[in-house]
Image (cartoon, rainbow, N blue to C red; front, side, top):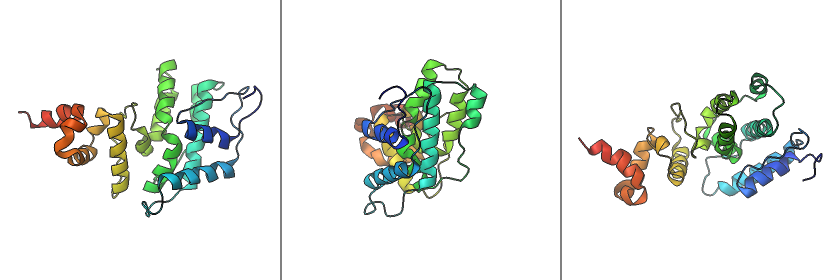
Amino acid sequence: MHTGTPILLSEFIYLLRTLGQLNLYATEGLFPKADKEETLRFLEQEFKAAYPNQIYPDIHFESEVAWWAVNLVTLASGFLVQRELESTQAIASLPDYTNTPTESGILSADLVLCYFPDLLSEFQRLNPEDELIPALKKKLLPFWFSMAGEMPIEETIPFPKKADLLMRLFAERVYQTKNLSLANNEPLFSFLTKELGAYSQELWPEFHYTYNHAKRTP
């Protein structure tokens, strides 16, 4: 990427999705050039590939919340690379998502937000006192599904009612990342305990001894 050549937003998101990590591009302080239609077209394809209708008939791609997530990630990554605004100005520029996200909406946003723990960790590494960190976490709290990695969630997770699919997928992600702090949240703890069953000691020894064994010991 040559200096002074702005990357298209769809290219930025494509690299994010295909490389599986957050690659930050700063071209003389420019943010990626927005091509909304192409970006959403690509994300919808990614959604259908991840959640094919034959297996997940009750969910669908929600473009509005996906576009909000794209803007949040783009702005936050830009602030990480080149901060020209003060923290209060940067926080004020972050987009809001004012609706209550649905299962489909949370999964649509997760196509991009799943990389956000890495971004927050980098903010934390560079400046643990950066005021953007708690502001970003607050934006992401309704999208707790995307925070199942190493970055801890410090508030109670707002598990929605009647979200069995989301709970199952979240439990799988927490199990994959072996995030003990998240595993102890209800109703996730009960769900994991039931799913792991008699094999919890073999499948996830830390979970078994930290929580199950401890809860049974007088």
